[in-house]
Image (cartoon, rainbow, N blue to C red):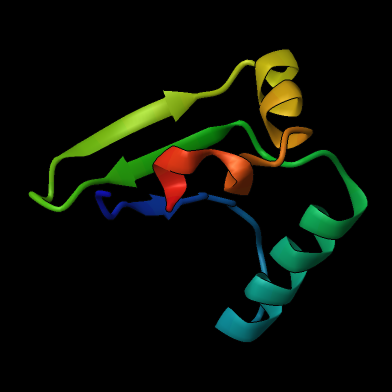
Length: 71
């Protein structure tokens, strides 16, 4: 299994870094999850990904821990 660093970028105006993080948290808890991500793999190769909401919702509804490939 490979390791990835997935980053969500949220641009906002705030007085402090903590306030900006709290505003992002508020956004994540009150609205639909973001679909734009930056993904960095083990070799530090970066990729920008935009998910299809319908496919993402379908994936999220399935318990992937039951997949033997995850053991």
